Image (cartoon, rainbow, N blue to C red; front, side, top):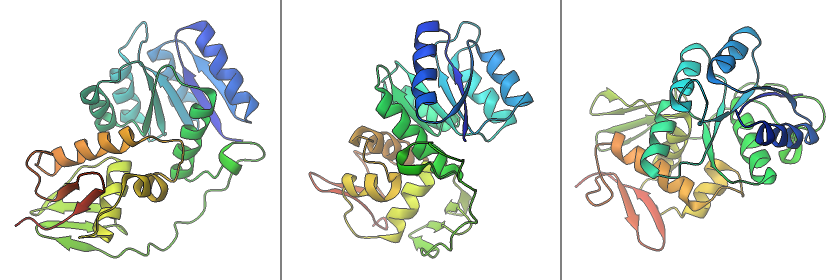
Length: 243
C-alpha cells in the first residue's frame, strides 16, 4: 500500500489526518516538525508527504525546499494561506499540489490520489484500498513536439523552451502548457483542463487560475498584457503565437 508521511504539529489535526488516511488504506507515518520530516524522508522513503506550513521549528516553505533538495517525493501542502502569491511560491518551490484549510477528508484523499497517480501509483477508485499500484512504464505520448512563436514544447522529453531558453516548470505547469500547446489556437475551458489535465473532479477552478498565473509569469507575460495565453472571458483559455 502507498505510504504517506504526515507533517503536522497540532496533535488533534495530525490524528484526524492519520485516521482518514488509514481508513482509505494508506500506511501512515507522522511527525510534528520540519526537521523530523527531513529525517523521515532521508532515512525511510515514503510515497508522498502531506506537509503543514505552520511548523514549530521551520517555516513550511523552507521545509518544502529542503525536502526538494534531497528527494523528489510528491508533496501535498496543507495551508491556511489562501493568498495566490503565496500559493504560487509554494508551487514554484516544488509542491505538487495544495489544500487550503479547512478541508474535508474527501478533498484530502482526492488530491492525494491524484498526486500519487501522477507519480506512478494507481490507487483504486480514488483511494488506496488494496495493494500499491505498480509503477507502469510511461505510455507513448500522443502529443508531438509543438512550436508556437518562440515557444517550443516537447511532451515526450518534457521540456519547454522560450526563445531558446529552457523554462523551469513544475510538473503541473508543464502538463498544463503541453495540453494547451497540443490544442494551439483552440479555446479550452477550465472544466476541460480539470478533467483532462488534472483528471480530478474535486479540484476547483481556482487551482487552474493559480497555475495559469504562475505559467504566465514564466512566459514573461501578465493576464492584462498576454502574449501566448489569451483568456476568452466566460469561455476559457487558448495558446496562440504572439502577434
